[in-house]
Structures are given as structure tokens and as C-alpha cells.
Amino acid sequence: MATTHEIKATARNDEGKGASRRLRHAGLVPAVVYGAGQAPQSIQIEHNTILLSAKHEWFFSSVLDLNVDGKVQKVLVRDWQKHPYKLQMLHMDFQRVDENKAIHVNVPVHFLNQEKSAAAKTSGVVISHNLTEVEVSCLPKDLPEFIELDLADLKPGDIVHLSQLKLPKGVEIVALHLGADHDIAVVTANTVKEEVEEAPAEGGDAAAAPAPEAKK
Image (cartoon, rainbow, N blue to C red; front, top):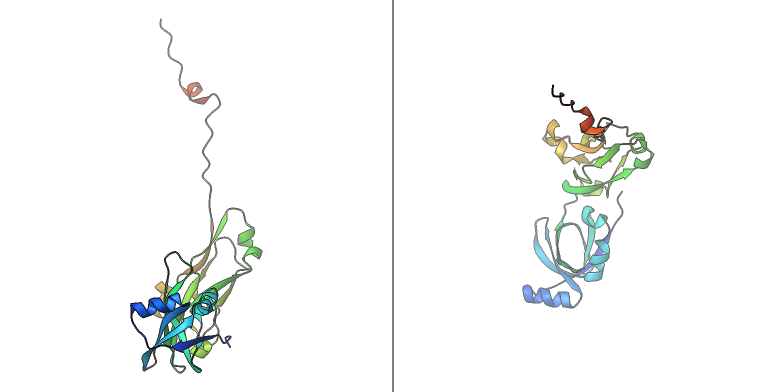
């Protein structure tokens, strides 16, 4: 069972760019919550709450408890706008979820024990993490915060595909429903051969060149 994460917010009635600017100046983030057959609702959240939460990967990949004036709704973060250079969140979009309907969410992959693998201990082997997150489908209650991939047995030349990931019960990888061609590599352990230039023959090119014939 995933950990519960609650985000507190309050409803707001003012709309428009001017109202949003005033909220940001007051240390608040304008946001909207929508979906699940209900009307969209404009809300505001303390900026520090968002800033601290956004430092954790669960904020973007978990079902959150959005507490708006004491009423809790199950939501996912669906969009966010950040300032181009300031450490500031400008706007958030939350989507309500129906606890009886499957959701599609990108979930991070955690790579374990790579340093213990034969591939990591072999000179000239490059281990590539081709995917750091995967899109899964499941009921909200079954959504994992992350998927673990144990690389302890990874050997030089190995490839770990999507179909080899161990998933919690009730969780499926969306891409695998699209056919075998979508069973792409998550991790590869490739041996890189260094190209070594051959040293010139002793004496250099001059020594290798034929001597001119003597004049008679």
C-alpha cells in the first residue's frame, strides 16, 4: 500500500492573470483541480508547500490527498508551470481520480545493486539506463511510488527489457499492450572497444621507403 501524501489548499473565486499575479506576490500558487465528472475548481496553495513537495518524486507520480478547505479529493499532478529561472512554481493542474477506474501514470525506476554486478566490475563495460520511468496502468489504490530493478546479476552484454520488470499485483506496463516491438530495453551493459592506433614501424616512414637507385 502506497504512503498517503496530503496537500492542503483553499478555494479561490478570483480569476484572471491579475488575480494570479496577486496570489504569487502573496506567496501562493494558483491551481485548478478538475475531472471525475465534476466541475473544475480554482484553488490556491502555499508556495512553500508546493516547493517542498516538488522536491520528492512521489509528488509527480503518486495519488495525492488534496485537502481543499477540509474536503479531501484523490488527485494526480497533471501539469505545472515553473518560472524560467527563479525557484518558483507559477501554476498547478490537478486531476481528480475515480478510485474504481484504472489510471495511467509515469512511475520512476529505482536501480539497485548495480555496483555489485559483474558488468559494473568489468573494465570497458558501459551500463546505460535507457529509461528512468515507465508508464503503468492500474487502479489508484495499486499505484506504486516507484518500481525497483535489481541489477546485481547484470553481466557484460546483458539487456533488461520492460517485460523483465517485476511489478506489484494489479500493475501493468502500458507499452507492453502495444506489441512485442514496444518491449524496449530499460538497461544495457555494452562492452566498448577502444581503437588503438598502430605504432609506425621502427625508423618511421623514411626507413620504410625504398632507397633510390644509384646512377651508373
